[in-house]
Image (cartoon, rainbow, N blue to C red; front, side, top):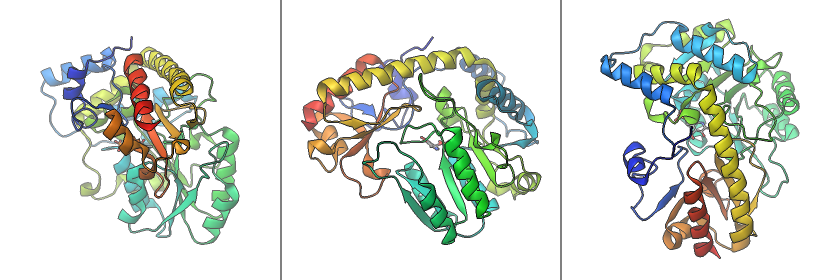
Length: 380
Ligand SMILES: Cc1ncc(COP(=O)(O)O)c(C=O)c1O
């Protein structure tokens, strides 16, 4: 069911991931997968294009995306979502920005570090200060330190930008962890923006994804921002969703001036509806493929880079790898220059941190094998 695209196809299909590297470079950086779309999405998009769907989307409440997401959340996560909670937006980045702008008090935003690079700038863009909650690179398990979170809120922070499952930690938060976070947030009357873009990508052997909003006592202080785009590789089609169950927050988000949230695309709606409605089997197959890629990566690292350190990858197709043992401050730069493989540098996610990379394993087994072989050639 999961079809690998050829290099030539990928250079056209993924202009950023594959288009921005020289032809002899293997790309393992941007978070896009190298697989063909699910057939149901392809068919829905073909029909939409054939029938000329290029007008503005309908800006009504809930709508087809709301219905489709509610069904998906119930089947995939056991989470009952009212379609009216669902507000389309262009992408997750825009949704997080909008939620901070509209709902958060002016105080600082807590950002767990390492964190998704563009979000390092998002607090400042909304006129707020970013305060970092740093995970020790030597910690056995990447976790949010609740005492530190408590201290940051006590010092004036008003919002936690949570990413779960987390990129680049590759972790799925357990229900107990999320309840711990919720309790600290509630104690301070603070807010949570929960970026759950990677929720459909929980790998074999990991605990299930628990939507933050499925916990009791979260609806009044949290919104989630979700999308099918990482699961179904439709990043460029632009239709993510904000889930806002609290009536006042929901109304505040819906009633923003149009210029603040009018940029999602009707083809993005088509892809989201098809993905959320007709692709469960394909998604199962994707998770099997990504889990086997994850297992292959562990084997390849043991063989070729035995001093690399990687915590168990529970979700996402993005592996956070500690290569400090090989003595390069910027192993991604060395791997590009000497191995002709493009990885994402760790310091983009954790400013100032040497010796780490993020590797995208959502490709074929052959390419992944070659990626690690080239890394070893460059780094050892
Ligand atoms: C955690 C996280 N949030 C948001 C995004 C970006 O999403 P979008 O393209 O919908 O803005 C990514 C992309 O990799 C991501 O990993």
